[in-house]
Image (cartoon, rainbow, N blue to C red; front, side, top):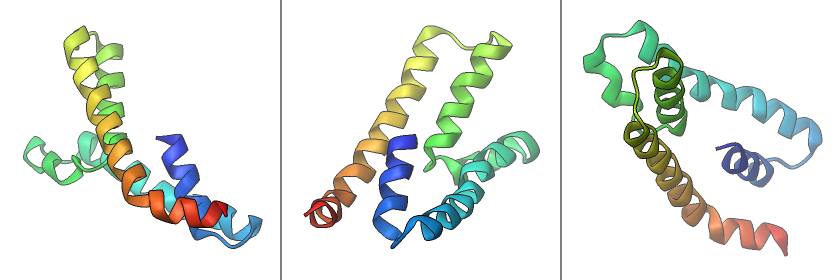
Length: 100
């Protein structure tokens, strides 16, 4: 997740100061799934399924509460990897042009 965020911030920022500002802006969508998980009713969680932070938090919360088994954690990790791979594949053409 951090690598994807780093690539996207690097691609969209023109300089170091702009990148620092963009990282602060990225924290809002990173924290939102956790807040929805903890504060909203369970019927609203589908709104944050797009976020890898939701799935990471779900796995960590299950491990800390000792309510998740290995299969549940592996599923959560698989979803995070699938989302990261999709974002990477979508951003790949822009990454290639930025690295030239």
